[in-house]
Amino acid sequence: MTATIIPDLPVFVVIAPLFVAFVLPTFARRMRLVEALVILVGILGFLGALYLASLVFAQKGSPLIYSLGGWQAPWGIELKAGNLGALFLLVVTGVSLPVSLFAKGNLAQEVGGKERSARFYVLYLLLGGALAGMAVTNDLFNVFVLVEVVTLSCCGLVSARNHPRAAEAAFKYLIMATLGSTLVMGGIGFIYMITGHLNMEFAARELASIWQHSPHVVWMALSFILVGFGVKAAVFPLHVWLPDAHSTAPSPASAILSGLAVKGYLICLLKFLYNVFGSALMQEFAVDRILVLAGAVAIIA
Image (cartoon, rainbow, N blue to C red; front, top):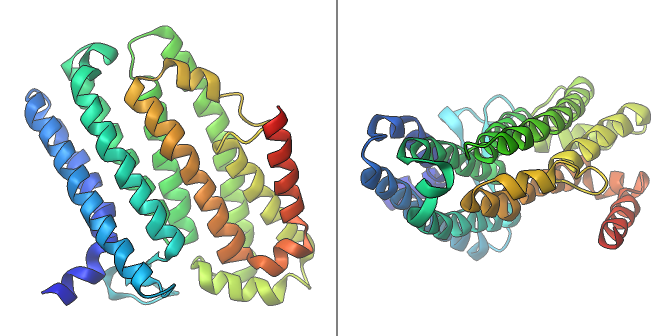
């Protein structure tokens, strides 16, 4: 029984909040049940992520791999929980749980009624499931799909308050996020065009030998990925959407946006840089210097 459950942990932590998010509207008028379900999902997700992290760390860097439907890579979709993914998954569930407990107190007052609270929780669970998926996915296209789920969920959470300023802030965020999504999709398209793979490991193997023959295409893909995730992660000077979004969002949404959503995009960027492009390509294109410069400017600005 244990041997069956352990490999399914990555997909359980991702699917559980997404499944509950879709059934939650059925109980929209019973707020106590809605809140109990959200908290229960948070507790189970945190315990699952904690156990998964302990397994990964006990293996001293050996990742836990789950192939959806039994289809092995590169044909199937693969979830891979390594050190970084397991740690971020633990952070996602560890932050989401206390936020859901805090939201139970005054969420209805902030968003303007119990009906809007139920909608908030649906978006909240979609966001949590997508962030968990971003932590463990090993597929480039799934990264894009999950990034879009996070983006749309964040737009809904920002506009949760029934106020014109909230709608304006959500619209600004949507416009900037769409720009970032377009660039990320373009970068993934370039990678797929020259490698023929969407699995991160297989794409990385091809890039290691292709970049010498097609450096301009690789540089274009890398640039699109850097700028695209830079917009979504509000990296200076691409952070113009951030002040309005945080100031108008309800308190629980603001906590998730700043504590998890923005960091989730950075985790995806790190996975692209180190798992797809690799340290050799980063040194060749001086990506480390670019990131250091961007970080220094962001601190001063």
